Structures are given as structure tokens and as C-alpha cells.
Length: 404
Image 1 (cartoon, rainbow, N blue to C red):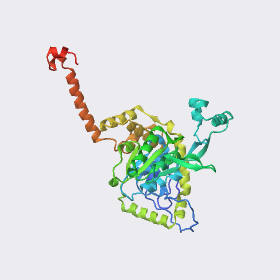
Image 2 (cartoon, one colour):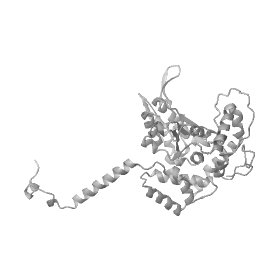
Image 3 (cartoon, rainbow, N blue to C red):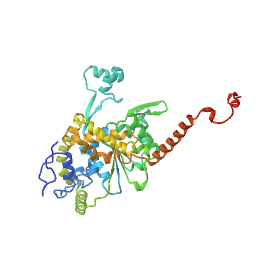
């Protein structure tokens, strides 16, 4: 992909940005073009801080962009102290999100359902439309669906609502249903209630979930990309939900004084006039969104060479990681990085670059201790089996006496 200079004008920035990695280096510390504040026209929609205006935090920005390029990575978890830009970065992704094909049917029927299971796999209305060569889907932009910290279980999975003049009861869609084919963002994910986390885990594992409310039953698709943020000093994250995040990113504060001052200037300009500040990045953001969407389509063209696979598997083996999601995340992230860098062959170096994000926090000292203790017990059991039964104690008469 090739990106030309956009809002980063002045100084030594007048150069061509050829790859995603070039963009991350460029966008981190360059000064923006200051403009006077514009009149507040009372826009209801919030103008989030532009993703391209973030200073520093290269690993965090790389992880989020790789997640957009390749949903098979399994999302990302951002871990760090307060005020390091985690939530700002995630919300700034919205203008960069690609288009997807959504079902026109309330039951979520898709053309691939017919291809896999025939006409019986979709509802009668969709089967009729398909037979008449009418489209079953429409093009829509991927959305960022936020899961509030105070969300109740009925908000997440759905609840009963009154419809129509005759007070007909029906199930109202929940957050997990609206997150289908979108990005589900959970801020302070370690503070979510257990019932909400359980519902999210079930939906993430199955891709669908069912809601039962008396005689009313509804089944929804829930195939989402999960992104979460957390501050570790506020509490630990349950292992079950941690395992659902593909990339794990540590987000410390910015240490360089120049970068910190530039971040301050941009934050001040944004607060003074969000519209004027965002407009500086709007054109360039749209260009990159189109390039990212094109990159998504090329992900299947990448080749994972045998040497690269062996190096990745050896790395996982040396670290003693048991979860098979390690290989999935590692290799899919490496493929996304490769295609974003304008290449088709995944090199060992690509695996090394994404390995810290993909393999971090996948080992468990508790599980390792448990498995070691179990291995010791298994050795003792096998040793006992090697001893003849007449050597285990008791006389022959007792051995031949049937139990009563």
C-alpha cells in the first residue's frame, strides 16, 4: 500500500509513506498544521480524537491496525495505567473501519448459508429472494459497539419489550447481537460483572446465542472482533476472558519529552475545536481506510513458508505455551503484518515482530505447577502397575476370596 503525505505537513514530513509501518513511524511525532477554532454548530455525534493524531505508542497502534486487517487474529487487549491513550486509540479507529456485507433478513440469512446447507438453511422469504436473484445482503460500514461498564445482563443479551397497539411482547436485541460483524469494545474489561462476561464468552465461542424469555425464544448471530482495555492496578482479568484476546499490548506512558509536549499540544487543540482538529486528518484518514480495506482482501494471498512455521512453533514450544490459540494468533498476526508491509511471503522476522503481542501472558504458573504435580502422580501410578499383583501384599487365600 502507498500513502502520500496528508495532514502531517511541514518540516521533513513531505515524503511518501509506502507501508503501514512507515505510517506508524511518521504519525507518531510530527507536528500538525494548526488552524483557528471553528463555530460550534451543535453536532450531536461525538468527534473522537483522530487515530492518526496519536503520538507514540507504536505497538498499540500496530496491534489495532492488524486487528482491522485480519479479524482471525482475535482482537486485542490493551493493558496500561490511566491516561496513556488506550480508549482514545480504540474510539479513533471508527473512521478507519472497513465495509462488510450484512444480511437484509431479521433472521440473519446469508448467501453462504445456502451454499453450505441449501435452501433449507435459510428462511422461506430469503429462499424466495435468492431464487429471484435478489440480493440477500447490503454493504455497510463496520461499527464500534461499546460495552458499558454498568451494562446489565438484559442489556447485553436482550430483553422483553412491548410492541404494537395490542401490547405484543417481543425480545429486544442486545449489545451482543448488535456487535455481529462489528468490533465489540469493552473498556475496563476486568471490572465487568461475571454474568456479562459469561454471556460474552459464550457468544464469542459459538458465534451465536439464544435468549429464552418465557414462550419467546430468539437466536442471534454474534460474530465480533473483541477489543478490551484494562488498568491492572484495578483488578485482575479472569483467565477465561483473557484467553479470548488474540494480541496483548502493554501501553506505558510516553517517556520522550518532545513527544509528550506534542501530545499536549494536540490534546489542547482538539479540546479547543474538535471539528477543526479532526478535519485536518479527515481526507488522509479516508485514504488509509480504503487502503486498509484493500489490504484485507489480499490477506489470503500471503504464504507462510515452512521455515517460518518451524521458527514460530519452536518459539511456542520453548515458552511452554499449551493453548493452541497461540499458533493461530501468532501466524495470523504475522500474515497481516506481511500484507500491510506490501509483501506476500511471511518471513521469520515478521513472526518475531508480532511475537511479543501474540504470546504475551499466555503462560500460567498455576497450570504448569498443576501439570507437573499430575505428571509426578502418573509416574507413580505407572510404577505401581509394573509390580506383579502378588507382590502388592495380602495372602493368596484373601486374594481368591470373593467379596460379599
